[in-house]
Length: 442
Ligand SMILES: Cc1ncc(COP(=O)(O)O)c(C=O)c1O
Image (cartoon, rainbow, N blue to C red; front, side, top):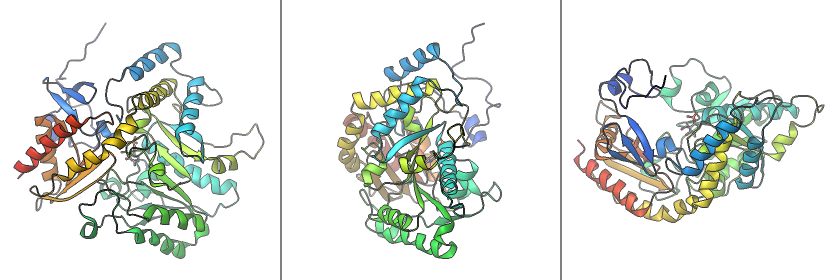
């Protein structure tokens, strides 16, 4: 029997929603029922401008024909193939396409299904890499305060967002954290990379002195920290991290789950900053968020270290049932084609300064204490309400939604990351609504 999902379901109790105030939401639900281009449609028939590319993932916008057609075609042609000891052409094609768009040293691709899984995969590859080379003492992992690396145990252990960690026990052992790079006194209202803070990378030398470099496997950072509220790397910071890692034989992992696929106007943040890590984690924009998929990009040096035992032996005891799933692979190929054919990364790069000016025009509005940006990313930091942290930004979120704009908030920070197909009129629309909301915010 055909079953039409009602536009507004009348029982919301069963679905335990992720990262959501469930009880509050279910009293006053906000439902999207369709999406096209830059806009969502709500269950009450309103258009809402997507100021966040969903969750930083729909970089090509919504309902893109190449992607939807590729998914339908693939589903009827080959819906699933076993991922272990079997292959299918699209996963290989997508891996080659990723290699071709990645910075030069990245020759190999390991498929996952999410950013969280990409992080776990990269951490495991780093540990195993040292071990297969006979440096098995390198077991320690270094993350950073305020880092977000997904929600699995490795990711929350190296991550640095307190609420994502404090409920979940002792986490991984052998993890240290670099200090975060938020220096509001020195760097407020910076456009692009802040001037101050490169010295914060020197803390890695302190950690090396404490544990011995020969015991450290990898450092993982977001080259631009997104989920914590958009923190740009200070000038010279990533270069310093790179050189300290190289000096001590420590692998550097860039978590590019947000920054990959054009968000900064280049393929990857590694290109944008001109700093090459050893592993890159991706997800989100890889399939335009349409089908879950992630990927870890590895250099030949790392990959080849595993290719030394007998040929019939499995080289890496890791993988997922859905690694390189045919439909996800087809979606990924169509997504990359859409980015290319529509020149979306170029659009992001060419609109970055218009975006920057529009964003910084909000300086001086009530409660605004910092504004920062890079590529098609922006953040507006507000003062919190005394005794009710996060409420002011969340009120802004609710009011924006009512006025037809989707924004995202973390603490009292508003984060913006629209699809890369945005145009100037839509940038004006976005900041017009935000301006009105911020002016009226209590
Ligand atoms: C930098 C970074 N890493 C990992 C993740 C986790 O990705 P997922 O939610 O797909 O597991 C995210 C999600 O926002 C992220 O921003």
